[in-house]
Image (cartoon, rainbow, N blue to C red):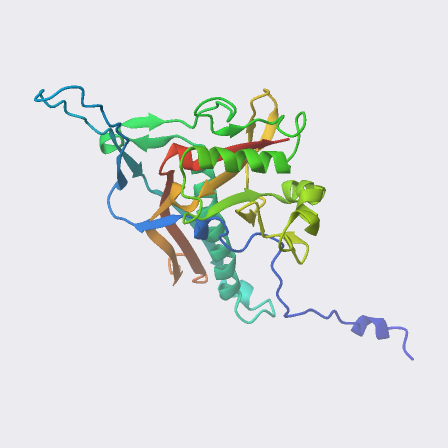
Amino acid sequence: MSINIPDFFVKSFTSNVEHLLQQTDARIYPAVMHGSYVGQSAQVVNQFGTIAMQPVVSRFTPKVRTDAPTDQRWVYPLSYDANQSVDNFDKLKIIIADPLSQEAVVARNAVNRQKDLSLINAFFGTAKTGIEGGTSTVFGTTVTTTAGGRNVAVSTGGATSNLNVAKLREARRALMSFNNDMENDPSFIAVTSTEHDALLGEIQVTSLDFNDTPVLVAGRIKQFMGFNFIQTELLTTGTDDAAGTSRQIPAWVKSGMHCGMWNDITNDIHQRHDLVGDPWEITTTITLGSTRTQENKIIRIWCR
């Protein structure tokens, strides 16, 4: 046998394709209201407030007009794009039959995450209200233990605690106190793996002694205390009511959030004849905007 046989050793490559771990679907987007719009802004809803009945104290007195307060909610579009290129020379050097299709999948996943990110930013961001969106309405910082508060304190259920049953109860109570229709307007809560794991340590969640039906489905909490659970790692942190850094957990009813779509995902696959080798380019775009529809339909739970 020749000593030079190793010169003929070869490398074996694969045509298998695998995408790195990532959130591939839009998870919060299906749990809100939707609309399709054109123009530089869109009015989501006209709103009428409450009035109180007045006692009639005497006969034949002049009528006193009662004016219901009104408001409006607006949404503004933001555009996002992703541009990917595949060189024809590069295509000759790889085994993958159609890299363009895989690049399109990557872009679709990014679009789905952007739908959720648009809503996550709108949960506690500044909403545009009033005539032609001329008023900026911020999400307040008052805790739910005070009148009109929409924030479950980080100390609820334990000092600087993570998500627990006490916080879920308080969020539910707050939504009910604002007269949300909890029977007909589905309620949701978004959590990361950290908050989900914290709840698994709560006996009220895992034990059938406290629940009519099992809460865990294949090891995951799907529904508890009337909330439909959505797991995503995209949630953000902020400065909590104790001046520390905590994750902002949104709890909401479906009608409380709105995502307006100006242009859903668009893929344009074309050749760049202005570049050497006429490479292929995939341009993916989406234009959308999100907002709260009412302040009292959203509760923020602070979780350390």
